[in-house]
Image (cartoon, rainbow, N blue to C red; front, side, top):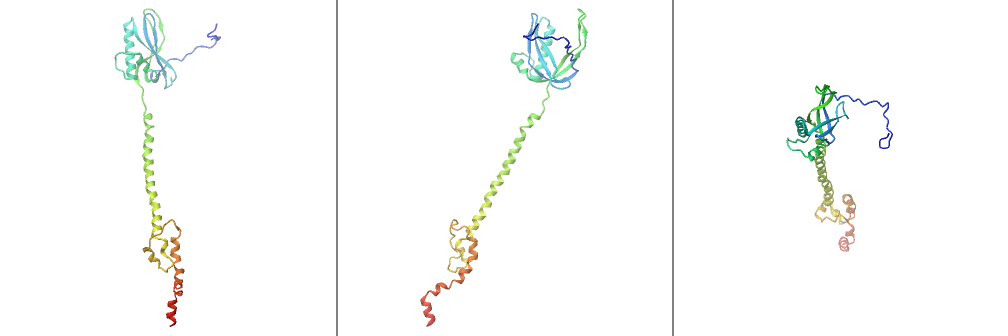
Amino acid sequence: MAIAGIQVNTSGAGEVAFGLIPKGKVEALIQGHEIKSDNQSMAISFPFLIISGPSKDRKIFERATIQSSNPKATAFGMRVLNSLGKAVLGKPEGDWSDADLAALKGKRVILDIDIEPERTDPTTGKVYQARNRINGYEPAVITASSSYAPAAPMQQAPMQQAYAAPQQAYAPALQQPPQQYAQAQPQGAWNGAGMAPQAAATLPAPSMQQQPQLPPQSNYAAPPPAAAAPQPAAQAPTWMAGATG
């Protein structure tokens, strides 16, 4: 014997015994739904994957009967849909559609898990083992961590803009004093005619592009030309003739 072409033998493998899920509230993920039907009824099966607590990764199922010859089974199925729809989708009582069932998949919900004790059917004598059942549903708790992440970049942007503004306003102030100093001390403070440095303020300022390094030299070059001032007078013949006569 084989399954899909693979030889399978379970001898000596033992049995799986997970035991019952403890009573209490756990967070679970709705993994989808499956519609099951036979000649007498139709029901929707919901598998839940527990994602918190000591029973994490365990599964539990809910069955909501939507059509049956037993009115009690159908009434219970409608209560299951109302409770699940309100807790997960915020859906009020009313009509359900395939789109509503599809919207449940991937959603989180809080399950109130209980344990139904072992019982014996008084009519047939059949014994039913103890099993888990879901007593109710509650909306999953939503934390605030997802809303806090986008707020951090919004607080940093104004700080960067406010810090850049003083740098732009301060840069021109550093460049203006050198320009004013170059105009206040023109090159023509001494022009070879023995003029005092104070008279240079009345002369037109020369172009700054001709000799930008001369303003400091004009303050120290004035004394040597002052001693050479009599040289133009020695070349005049009229003055020499008047002195001899």
